[in-house]
Image (cartoon, rainbow, N blue to C red):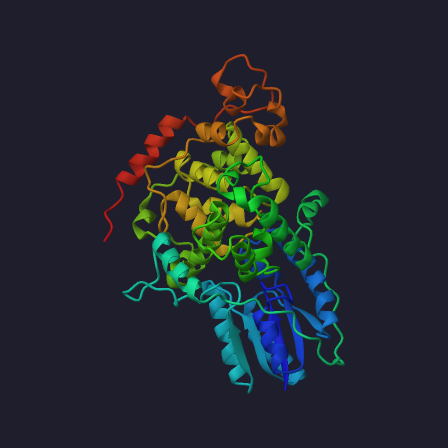
Amino acid sequence: MNQLIWLRSDLRVTDNTALSAAMNAGPTIALYLITPAQWLAHDDAACKLDFWLRNLSALSVRLAELNVPLLIRRVDDWQAVPALVADMCREHEIGNVHINDEYGANEQRRDDAVAAELRSNGASLRRHLDQLLFAPGSVQTLAGQCFKVFSQFRKVCHSRLSHSLPRCLPIPAPQTWLSVSSDPIPTTIEGFALPSEQLRAYWPAGEDVARTRLACFVEDDMADYQYRRDLPAEPGTSQLSPYLAAGVISPRQCLHAALAANRGELDSGQPGAATWINELLWREFYKHVLVGYPRVSMGRAFRPETEALPWRNAPDELAAWQQGRTGFPIIDAAMRQLLATGWMHNRLRMLVAMFLSKNLLIDWREGERWFMRHLIDGDLAANNGGWQWSASTGTDSVPYFRLFNPLSQSAKFDSQGRFLRHWLPELAHLSDRDIHDPSARRGLDVAGYPHPIVELSMSRERALSAFRHLPKRV
């Protein structure tokens, strides 16, 4: 009986759990679905979809080397997927459809519907753990609940990993040639504009690129990661998040590379390695939260009482934030980086999120949506988790009274203004002191750069007052 691997966010042949299981079970065909209306509904960025298609093209070459045909089918949204997959099973005499699990309420409902349709047609859906180290629901408190506090979650993960590491699977051996022709990979999707060539150049596609980036990071940058990760002008982060989001590299590959460089230590040894492993577990944590508390994938705050926050309707201020015209250089430089590259430095993600949700008191969901529409590494769990952390509406979030000051953060983490000068050339001539707050000194030549759209001390008090007057938690 033939097997089908339905590819989603797992665009690789190395250490691909579902692909290995399918090819071990019998002759295998691969499927990828183009779903434009669903992508629009989920606010997927055009640059992200372009990146995924470029990686799918690279993957098709690797699959051809394994004699696995890759079929491309198009439906508008996920409602049509169960019938389409069932029809393919009948057409190609497929007994099992293999998938690597995805997380989120819509994804779970989609896969449950496919499983039911296949059962009624004499086939089965085989689910595999792939984009996480631990299955959601398998890391729980003593009371049998999903963890709400990261440090406690991390402690359990460390304990389990110290006893048993998930292994990385090799590339499967080529199978016997099948008389099924692969389909061409589309290069564009109607309704999604092609990103600039400059943006595409930032993010070349393919497993080899991802593995090279990982190796270079481990060799050159991981030892200093614990402090260089906070410096936006430094290439101190791995910049692997787009490849992890698309499944071009697996978290297991990342973990094993870090452990190999750190003599097998999870939370000791090199501080940089331990810190980076910590970040891999934050990614894990937010996906577990997504499954344990489905409301966070439905546009709801994790802390229900924060739904009563008096968010402001301030479209002009929202637009200024979106386009990098707030008058606060570190905020504007970060937002321009996002628009130009599809990516933003992690510390800056926290800064701009806190500025929008607290200094401007604009609903964090506006920012979450804007990020998803522009991020090449857009991931529901990580994006939602980060936004709710910054807005103090989420699990294990920053206390509401802690507001990052964008001026002091800028001076601390970009003291020489290198990041600011790159993204704000109109301020490049200012001194290292003045560039962080050009409005502080009258007479500075900053033609074309806006004045601050909000007064920081006033906005801080406004945010604190809004949180203080929330109803008590039940």
